[in-house]
Length: 424
Image (cartoon, helix red, strand yellow):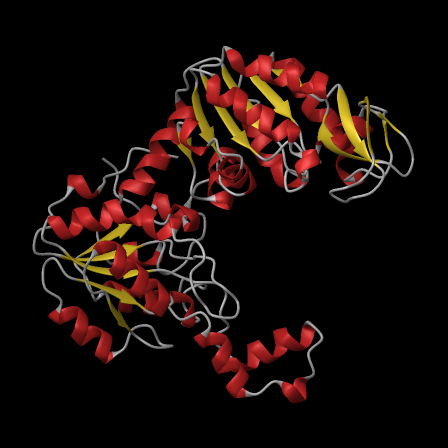
């Protein structure tokens, strides 16, 4: 995939109307609807402010949650979840949509920018009123479209919906890295009708993750954790072609231990992937890549924050016990492996970091990364959450804003929301 894409700085935006795809899929309080974390809104500010300062009129858009724009489909989904069909009224469906309205986002964005943000649109997202407001928008002004997923054409990448959104603007700017792995109307489809470039957020992701994959400062060390081998198949396979060392931690390490003939007790196990684990071990040996697996593990007698614990050799977990973190010898092994690295990519925690007792391995790795002189790149999702929760976020070179997107990026997959952008 070509990572060298045009950005907002490569085009003249003065006097132009810009359709800007952001990732405003923010967490909200279930009762009040108040935004509980505005990091994603703040992440979009540099691109928005640049466009406004350069004399562009900004038409921002984003999805929020997973609204169901069809009443019949909403009923079907709720019924599948065990709800009584007789209780599923149109009023309840409309309330489910209202809960994912972009109004709180528009309000918070306006506060951060220090200027009003007009929220335009309804369940159709683009209508004559929206078109009129977009046409009247002056340079330096900003409006926000209603939740793109209110329109069923969004997730289907419907050409008519994409064309309707594109008709509002002269230029498309993509800055929602968390959504670029999806070929939706607002992430890829609009680029069929408008010249498309990246914002600063996506540019940063392409520079760091793309640079690490295409031309890393070596040695390149990849740390892969998380619960399942199956979710990291493509990543491990691709990184075995690129990395000098791959470190395996988290729940998926027990599938590797079982594949090598070990006992894993009640630990997380994907028995369908044992052969795959052995293939990866063989491939690493064939490629000359160091594949580091845990040598010891912290085990618990139950999955609970106050469980009784012990430390045993990997592959020697007794029945009814389960591994929940890497052990002290493994921590030393893994921390030593990143000391002299040139680049480190980390995706996935080393244990159940949500429980303090089993966050030791994840914290030790985060601390080791904070002390190394290497370029440190943290994949989105749980690894990003762990680094922020443990207080090491400001010590990392780059923390990705996209969980699924960064994973697919590291797999070497083409990202539709990046492929559609103009090449430099």
